[in-house]
Image 1 (tube, rainbow, N blue to C red):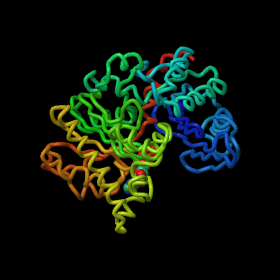
Image 2: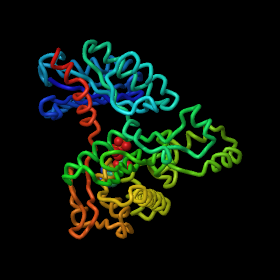
Image 3: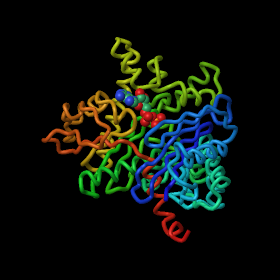
Image 4: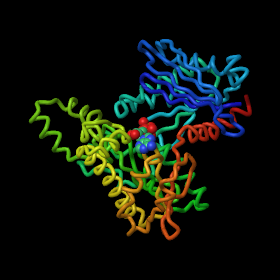
Length: 401
Ligand code: ADP
């Protein structure tokens, strides 16, 4: 029996199939350009990659293609799609409606729809994945796993913006935070690695989107993203935190509408905007190495913001026992980790530069023997976390089927 995990974007559908007994991945893939021309679907069955070039007008048709590959006589991994016992969906915004993963029913679908104003790009796409499954796998239980849910435990003084409180209440304004599934997975893995569930952890998820979370004994107490993923750190194309007055000033100076300026903050800022080279950390590093000063500044801002957020969260936690690096940059860039941690020795965090520079795709410790703080690299695995939640919420239904 298996669990299918889906992450559907507006024009893409990522999927991973897990064996229930071992929770090992047995197949994965990604359909791109759904609803457009020149669609593709890449499928991997653990041995071979299959590429299908075909247009997928809807998410449902992309899912249908993936399901037929699962049972294909050449590249398949199961005899019948009846072996799929449950489906877990990544859902971006659960607002204040969901503080944990839930079994999907009509009310849950309606509540995810209600959250669309807060996640206008992602929630409709996530719903397309859910609807496609309802059509293609009608009797299979489905679970929604929210990016925001892990942050529901953040105390009011940390999640409330200091604006007139009537507005906060009327419009459900708060710091919701994102990457919750990744932070939760990393915190669980760190507790296992350290054999201690009571740790004060600071988790840095550094990728195209980046956020830091402060976690005390497995519960999140603060995070750097806000009402939307625009807040906090400098990111690939997002600015992170800026003084809101900059928006008013530049809208007037450049004769831009608020929507136009928000689009600049979301898609033309961050590493890309500062460097003028790329939103990609590696490319920005290469440009900085070649002497490009704007690229160097972009990286310095990135590393400085991560470092100062770690400092703030050490204060929030009353000390820190472990710092985690995850996400494409956090897992792969030893230079980023070294730059972020340089200057944090006062917290008791000391890198072992040799361990830090050793390439590996495994979970690992990279602190020196004398470091008081454990420093860990933990490859992100949001899909496994979604599969685990899906199994937990459906195991009684599965045994009855
Ligand atoms: P997303 O947030 O879209 O899931 P990822 O977590 O895959 O993104 O992270 C993508 C980022 O990771 C890019 O900026 C990329 O440059 C960076 N990255 C990947 N590998 C390396 C590497 N070896 N060194 C530096 N940065 C890397």
